[in-house]
Length: 520
Image (cartoon, rainbow, N blue to C red):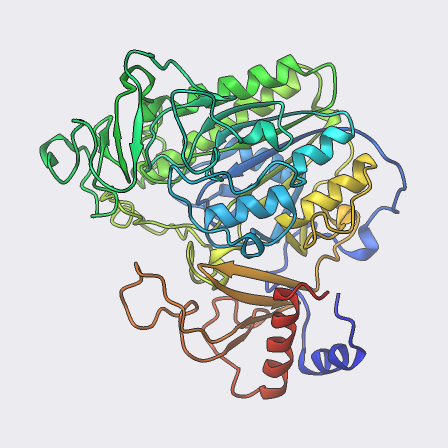
């Protein structure tokens, strides 16, 4: 919260409206409608569904067209559908880091990692999993990791650590990095699944190794044409980032992800149903390469991206139905959200752009993955807990970073001064007991930041530009002048009002620097 009363006064004077810029909706939570606060502490099961590259508008309950998401819409309509929920960053690794540690990714130089990167979260660093273990939880992670494994020189044929088991998880079944990066294998706990010791696996991000085909040498073997970055080792007819050799018996089949990961999640739930458990169900969908199972080929008019959304919905429904079948629904808090905003073309020519139709992946917002505009971090965010959370649409400004301290409050764990330093206790908001959320929220993208302050969006000028951004100016991300938008009247961030509000710009710029420097 802002400490300076002068600053607060000037902000209020500058603001005509406070809110999140959403149209009025039925059953919106207000302070008058909220139930009284409770001091009770409990230990519900906690399941976090963490989707990859799912945009604000990619669900039926958030306005999607061209694909249906009935399973997720069911929990959205019977829980809290947040309209101003955010990941901490517009790319995956920093967001995942922030969710699990309660601090901004830039504090640990988090960036999009290579497939053989060392563990970003080192043993001894408190995490959401280790915090919940203090409260007696069984903890598991299933799905995409992309937070690094090992010490920087991984022997993939031996025990792979440190990893999730060294930072608070009791069980892990992982995609080590992403679907578009080698190694294309599953890692269960410390070891690659189905690896033949007589066919050891090697990984290189420095150059060609072994005799596996590559996209740049064998384009005739490709199911999708890929850009230069994604055009190296071919597995399952798709070229990936990086080079790999060996490990043939352990190679995954992308179309099996839905069944493999969902079955593993259900196995974890059943193994721990007699005690409180925390499941971090981290999806590959709808990240590239998009290779959904054939059962979803008729589920969307948008081609494979829409089919991947339908597959993701089916996976989520299977897990929720298992929780209900076991009689655990009323003792399980479910949080559903995404690591960053949407992207259509991201390395593979899969017709996602051509088949988009009238669908708007970011809803009414501009930007998406990689952008500091709202579409980069404003993502679907749902909280569902039958019997505890009342159905509502909630306009509070909420951040995934706050899950850490909010859950700590819920389960009665004291958080140390140097733990989860950017996380706030927002438990009442996440449980739908108030429509008041954050005042300030820093949004990160590729080494740059932006600030949400109530209804205002401030994007500081920046000369930083990633190498893969080819144009001189990318609106909302890499312009060389300050930007300021009032999201109440301009949710698409089309009218830059910075020049008309120099004092407000100065104050918000100072506030941005304060947060970056850890001053709250």
